[in-house]
Length: 112
Image 1: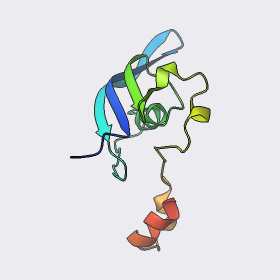
Image 2: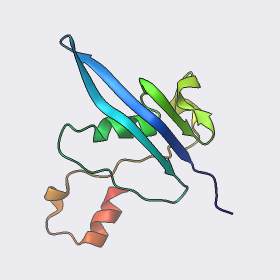
Image 3: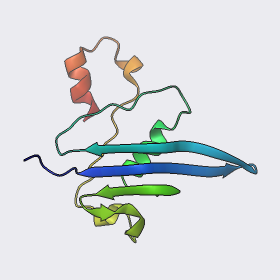
Image 4: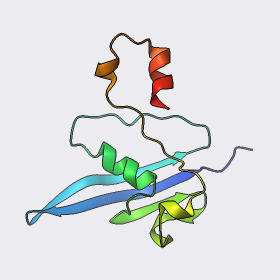
């Protein structure tokens, strides 16, 4: 039997108002992440990658949908990150262009 997911996101949306205009930063993301699983979130600048990571890491709350971390719904947390014993989502180094002469293996180590 497989382990339950550590992070569960269901139909997650995050909208912002910017100068009176609605910005739909994340639209309808659904995913499960199990303990020990690695995943990459890739896309062009401005497509919502950082916003999604903030939602999955309990730094922000979704406008619609749900994010559940270790069985706890992020929307129900009073102080989001303070209630999580360890952050389940970590963001790696984005500045790989600075590490041109470093091997792929060393780049992964540099991320953590």
